[in-house]
Amino acid sequence: MDHLSPDDLARLRAALTTLPEPVRRAPLARLTDGTYGLCLSCGEELGADLLTDAPARAWCPQCEADVVQRRSAARHGVCGQRGEGG
Ligand SMILES: [Zn+2]
Image (cartoon, rainbow, N blue to C red):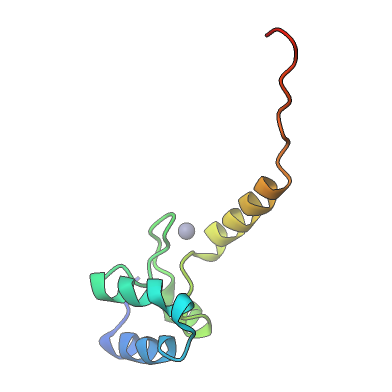
């Protein structure tokens, strides 16, 4: 798959600047260092369609599902009680 075109990047940057500062900070930093549009987890390119839909997106759909699942698992994580003796 091709990298995002300069036109895509310009359009997405403009879209990002309309978002609240805490939301746009990380994706704008990634635009600067050239990793914007790549999944933070697996490095897969997200593609213009996904990014147009959600410019601040940081994960591909597959990893995003994984991250959400892990977060919810962490919230409900079992608090390990230490038994007597080991
Ligand atoms: Zn991924």
